[in-house]
Image 1 (cartoon, one colour):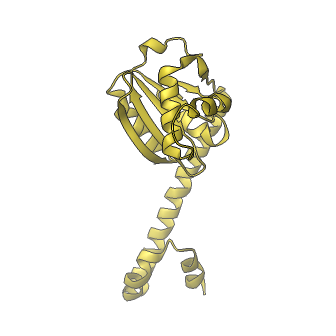
Image 2 (spheres, rainbow, N blue to C red; image 1 turned 60 degrees about the vertical axis):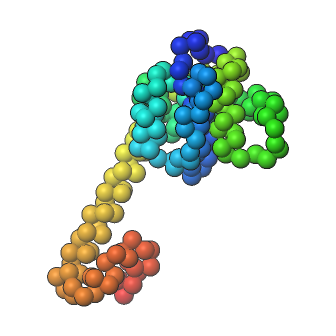
Length: 187
């Protein structure tokens, strides 16, 4: 249960997914401030939170706090906002109150945000142990390092191609990130 529900100005409901999420943000009066898909990306999640912070105190609510929801939860907690989750059974009961039977990410995100806004007793707080936060930070850093290495390698290959055969570099340079290109160049 959230202790300071009356101090929350914006309720962010996030339907988490493997590759992307859907977020809906509602103000205290129920007006939609945001309704959009988000990739499973730390930078984009931080940008979302920062853009909504201008509206006041935020509450970030997910439908799954672990596994695929771990990154959004960790990012939200790292920015210092309160995080909660709406358990599955409570979410399904709240969903039954909304018209339509189709389950969609935007609808689920809205249900999460609206449930957080109108039924705070259904929420559970999320506490991520410091060890998990450290592990997620390390994994995000590892991912960033790999992206930088891939860019550096591509730039080195382009530089060598420009020295050896400039016309060939102009033709294949923009396709170096294709998996078949490395094999082609090796042969």
